Image 1 (tube, rainbow, N blue to C red):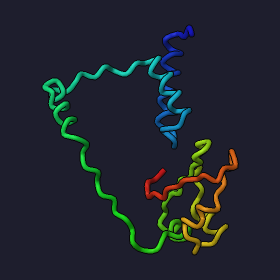
Image 2 (cartoon, rainbow, N blue to C red; image 1 turned 180 degrees about the vertical axis):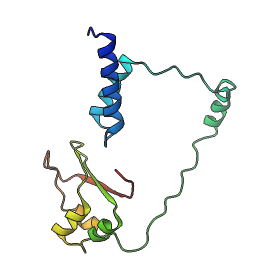
Image 3 (cartoon, helix red, strand yellow; image 1 turned 45 degrees about the horizontal axis):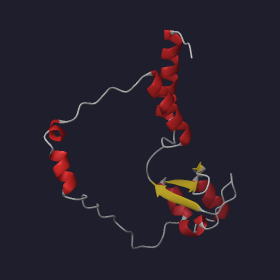
Image 4 (cartoon, rainbow, N blue to C red; image 1 turned 135 degrees about the vertical axis):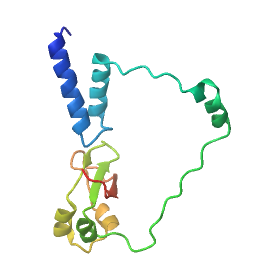
Length: 145
């Protein structure tokens, strides 16, 4: 593709903006855009750290995998759609078959299905709007959009 330097800079700036502002940084679309950006503006070559040059990383690798951090399991009742909405938490839902991802509004879901419905029970009702599959996963997170 023959681009002038000005058009190439504009394309690089637009790709960087789209990648930076996306809600789905691991999506196929964003990975494709990153590949295009890397061809237009290759990332800088990283020098190995002094520890890697001395073989410290190899020694650590031979010691085995690092212990996994413990996960705090909740022992109380499951979250409800109402408590999720009241906490301002996000529901992120995705299809395991077609990888369609969606973020329903917790307040709307509480209004539609009832505020007292447990989130795991709500999850069992979900069907992918793109392919019709019932193989749905979800996460409740407090992270802001």
